[in-house]
Length: 108
Image 1 (cartoon, rainbow, N blue to C red):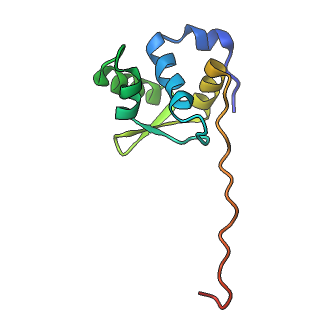
Image 2: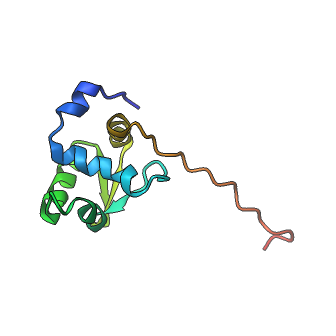
Image 3: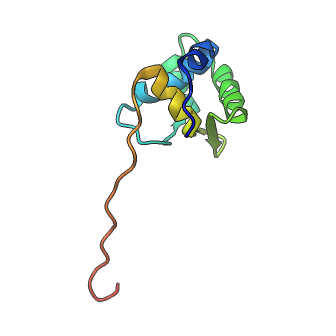
């Protein structure tokens, strides 16, 4: 994972910093790579951004490698996006950790 500089992050246009900062604000216990729907981000930023602006910003960030848009609805930070979020907010997403599901005795 490449480390992004503070200068790089602060040089990003406001809309990108606002969208990426929304992830830990909306889901403080979010796991690494977990996404948010466009509509959820919009509801968080609706006083300053339109849904169209958010969708276009996410498209641009996808082209730049900071997010991946899945099912034309959910925005998932990539490792680069996670680094930017951490630099912006001082918060790192948790690594998903779930123990293996135990199989029942008898092979079912």
